[in-house]
Length: 302
Image 1 (tube, rainbow, N blue to C red):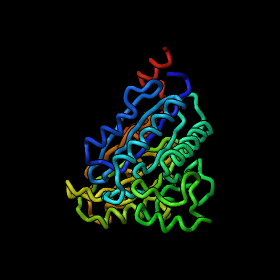
Image 2: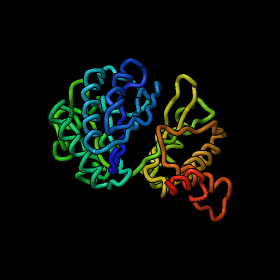
Image 3: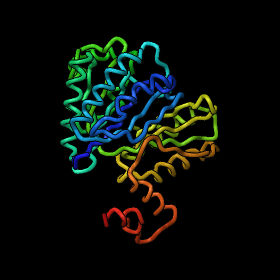
Image 4: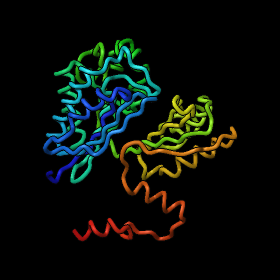
């Protein structure tokens, strides 16, 4: 691969049909200039999260091809799941990685959104650092109303005309959000209760939009197969609000309900520094330097 690398973490509204999942992921396998790092599915969320990295042009082509595959395979009129969603390809973030800037990730996001709008008739909203207006920066604001309410929402052309593509949702693939952003950590905490309302209340108290922590987005989700409630979070800047801080905040709020925290989980990939920060905090390590990590030292010597 070349020196300039950008990461992409597209989310697809299919987490149950393994045959469809494999067909979508196939768009990223064995492609020159693109490397499939990870993909995870969740039947409760009914969602597929793919993590790929690549040079800008091959990455663009693979992501666009995956849109085409998703349009063929996913019918949003029949989709049900715990996670909010508005399209077959729900959200596509581009993240600067090696020797790439946020501006270059933004340019790639706009190129993909324009192509998808023209080729597949999917309206695309630019979000996060690519947003064309302040009220469109937050993904939750764009997605409010979800697939079922999007046609009506988009009738308000002053506020919700798409940045690319037709003025109405694709009949079966809905709409998509595409944009550039800094690395995000998808982090969930499972509670020792089957009461979804407790998870919702905890989510309200820890998330930024309701006066909680900056850089935390959170919702309550029910894990039907385990009969457990979950606080599902996106940490949009782990350098400002650390993973351990989100975990401790959920634990603290759960105490008022007498509910234990059973475990937490990381969805997809995360920067190593996010875990180093947790180790420093919980081990109370003083004066730690990342060069003390053996793998970091080896990379320096290469």
